Image 1 (cartoon, rainbow, N blue to C red):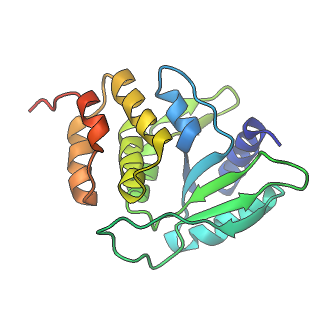
Image 2: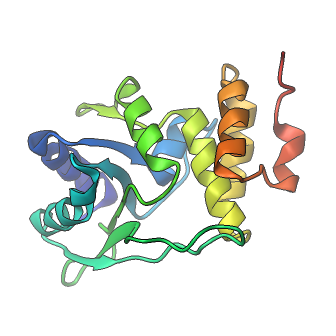
Length: 199
């Protein structure tokens, strides 16, 4: 199963089930970069109603794709409180396959609920459907969160650089307000690419 096929099938399942979700990760970052980047997995954020049902729903979606769900791991940041619930359901590849892995991020991640809500007004035509995609601002926050927890994620650093260089209308006030809310920062190597906040 190719990543594109996984993406198409997953979107079909998400839309059928009717819960709020959005495309995140490398596929979303490619939409905001000057050059597309390769990624082998497909990442979504899921906000079921009620949110506590998100894990169970994520596991059902992965099974419906013909894959085996398993709990994934996201490191905690130095000041972050211990998590009360699982924040990532991932999958193993189908038998004989090396690609087609899907990750579904859950509401335990502190940036996720707001990002999924905002993405409902940011549907992008991917050629096969209009898909809710994380906004550039929320993608910046998600990647800063990941880098604050695991600073060696070099692809995230490159994505941040590309987003700031490519996206000229990024809402810096929103980004700044939520960096404070989430108690995270933009990594030092990226700061020189961030436009000055106009007040």
